[in-house]
Length: 153
Image 1 (cartoon, rainbow, N blue to C red):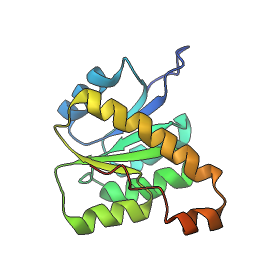
Image 2: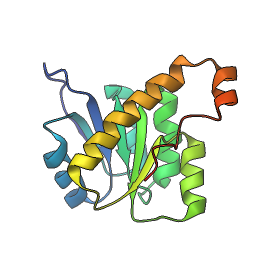
Image 3: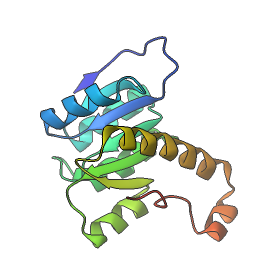
């Protein structure tokens, strides 16, 4: 688990959660110009701890991680940092898994290998969607059918 101190930059705060260090290194390198990487976690428990400590604007979460995987991480992160927009990044495209992650609170889902510029745009859009969701009253959100998941790619 790595917690990175918050700098002076006004970039959105990003948490990365994936047990593959190559993936987290590539993501950190390709996104650091647009986002302040505030932590890197290798399992669901670490992701939740880091989210509680860093209160990120957005988190990229892998589906298959130790200690409960993506669904556990999504639920736990939203419990400790409810403003966080969560984007799931994985090679698993099963419809059932995508539905489970969206029900758990993920805003978007995309496949590993996505172009870094496209991922940066998706993360920024997810932050905006999450902010709109939180601004709506619960009855308005239910009537609108929820905004989460509309960005899934």
